[in-house]
Image 1 (cartoon, helix red, strand yellow):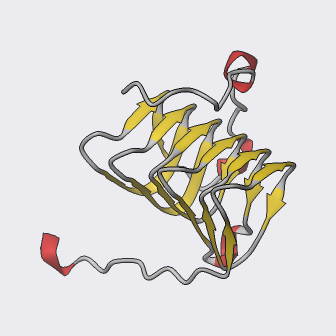
Image 2 (tube, helix red, strand yellow; image 1 turned 135 degrees about the vertical axis):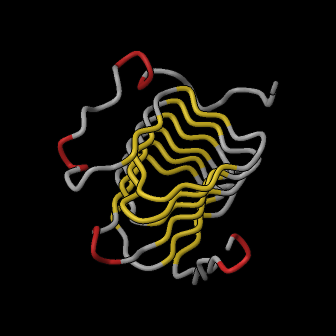
Length: 142
């Protein structure tokens, strides 16, 4: 039963490298891999089947709304995964996580609520302002 689960194949159409810093919102379709620091919201159309991969070096300060998400870095903001969410070993989220299917590795951290998604994720509340003002430039003290 457990071994017959299909792994999601991710094709990377866009890459934001480790030395990159982005201030602004990102809207994409396809596969996006982030090693960079992003301050802004990240969105992909719900019906697109898009995949966001956030590496251990990557960080996002903003809301993330993508159908399929693989997180191994830091996010300060709410996360909405309409289809699939994977929290890898070094995933650190400060905010609420809305998911349909979730896979969590030992060591992943969520400082917020894990909420099984309903059909209407668009009406979920935004992250409280005190989380939005925290800096992503924290040391790796975990």
